[in-house]
Picture 1 (tube, rainbow, N blue to C red):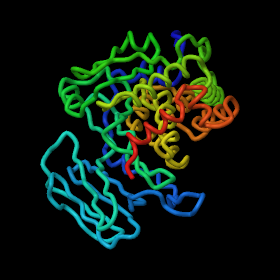
Picture 2: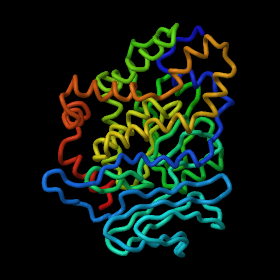
Picture 3: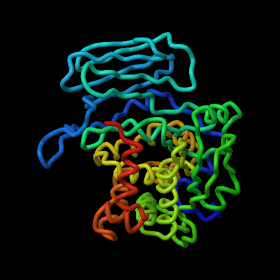
Length: 366
């Protein structure tokens, strides 16, 4: 391939022009639970008013919804959709709901007998033109709070959105779109954004001269992905781009906010990992969310690899994947460069304690 490549996202962009297909929503059933009991380590008490330790909504291809929950200190949980009770049970339960009317996004209100409830939906946003468009929220923090859903979204490229997709995103209140891609990606596959939304270029690799040689072996491909992850953290382009994203989320009181790259897994993956970490979501949960791109993009990635000779496919696969070692490289770079994640937020992205407090106030429940 003659064109210089900056990361696997560019490879995917070049080879999947007609291969992007939305996966079954059941892939979004990963809740990333890490077993945390949500207690404040200083005094052993749970600071959250939300009794749920687990709660998920998983949409099925047949129009059904599987609801799961666990809650402490309550004997009864009631779940409503469209204002009507659709399920109820004890402190722990599972229910399959069918027969609900078609909707852009089906929301469920989990109401415990005691304590604050949750409003949840399936994480995947099903669109004709994307494979990896999903909600950034719906996760529990280490203090027992929950990240609100319907406020921040992450996605792969938006150039294949249909008119119906755009209308749906407009109804979902997408107000700001951050494009994390390089100039050549933006030029070749220009974004389509919903009417009324503000489009912002936040090029993670702007000005970078790295990662320009195509890997020749699988090991070289893995190293390229690790190097790219590190550059997202400490490179000038990465610091500027993620500062734009964080400040945009913090300042935009009329959310929803969307950030995306080409495959929605690397540059977008670090953006969401950084956001969830800043909000206090446990590392294991963040990793599960990051790795879920392998599920959402499986059909598209399998189609790419099937068209390549075996030797070339072996080189490309590490670049189409997301792997724990890639994400870990980002966290390692944070520690090596800034010493702690809080210092990365403040010194790298300019997010001070006051702004972080406001971000948590806006995006956390409990």
